[in-house]
Length: 317
Ligand code: SF4
Ligand code: SF4
Image 1 (tube, rainbow, N blue to C red):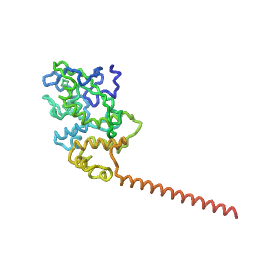
Image 2 (cartoon, rainbow, N blue to C red):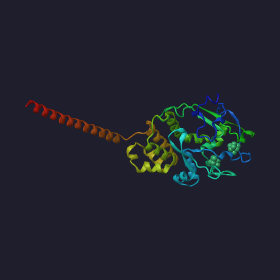
Image 3 (tube, helix red, strand yellow):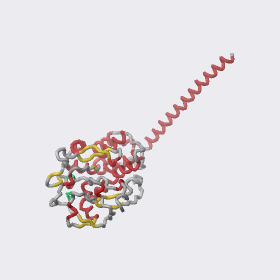
Image 4 (cartoon, rainbow, N blue to C red):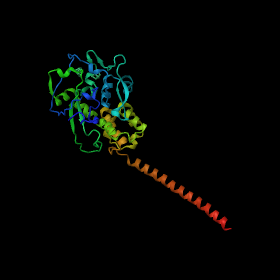
């Protein structure tokens, strides 16, 4: 595979590479071997933690704000800048780099101060992953079997000396070591929403309200929880008690639920059921409106008819 054959859609998603031309044009599998090691002894230690855009996924935000013991909105205000995701109109956030040295606010000469909770993008480097179904398959349909079609590739930044180290791993071992599989699982549905939007191009516009909802659900789960429990949400959607209890208490459950809700509201995925009573009320409302329109038409017709009768009566005289 040449680099040209790898379309931009398949290049590093939310990765830490600064230059897409550093992608090695070789497809790897989970069993492929790579030679790489990053540790405090390398000459370039922390060189990759500056001058870079690190997009945060909802799970990244959840982990970092917990680590820093901050409410989500404070974390967002203090540590992030707004961005559009993957050249779409979907709003997200990236880490705000320090003004004085253009580096990540979490980096010190000794390394990353949030290492065990570092964002997904920091874990992927130098092994990128392409998933051909990220935008295409309708993964939001319930019970739909999704055939994954993934491969991996190396991203080799010029300044990175990790490739000169002797340690050899399989891609699978490297990903396990970096905790990437867990992140993939946590980010998967959210990433699909973004890639789905990307595959639509800009033909279909997303309303400001939809964008606000996407941003709120993706960045601030406390607000999203308030929206669920303090609006007419529970009167509108069918939710079983077990789900209600889980999303009331558990942030990760709430996050997965928010992806489902976004898939339903942004893309019309049939994954949430509106209560029958609500549907009937809506149908009745439409019917009432139609009845009113019919009555109005009849009134209009009668008015025109009596005006004509009057006119003809006058002419007949
Ligand atoms: S979060 Fe940690 S690993 Fe990621 S860029 Fe910042 S300092 Fe580096
Ligand atoms: S070896 Fe590569 S990944 Fe590790 S600090 Fe250096 S540039 Fe960053």
